[in-house]
Length: 209
Image (tube, rainbow, N blue to C red; front, side, top):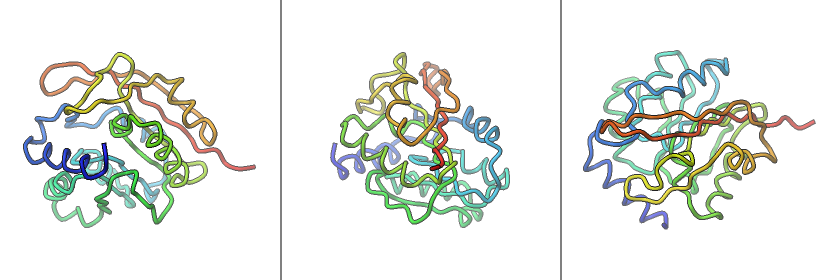
């Protein structure tokens, strides 16, 4: 799927469905919040939520006192919904409208968070590009917290094919520059009462000797 087709698809999804009508809806974004808390990173750490859309993660991170937050999403509609919900504090967040593969970061990140965006990349070249981009963008000693559908999860989401992963496969993609810190398989209950099994992994970027 080319970038324009991908963008049009997601703009349509966010135009037609409310916040609680999408399968990834989480009023409290766990386990991401808990895993981020366990990293014990400074409140002024640079954090980016990749494919964040109108997720509540940024709301909770603001409440916890984090001051260097960015949200990246291909959909302008999703970002506008999040800004409207957050209100005046939305000025404290850097909002980036971009396909992740076209993203050219202007700063390094202590934490790169991606819940359910990476698994939409099904072309090996796009997967490779994502790995290169994350590697470049994450600071040495920084973290990649990524969640994808597991081998027990769906094969499609929002009308699009996805790529399933297990912890070994995901680790192999990032092993050159990252070390696996933690992994877990976690069920997510959708607003429709169905169950989706996710693989959550935290990786730490290696510090060059």
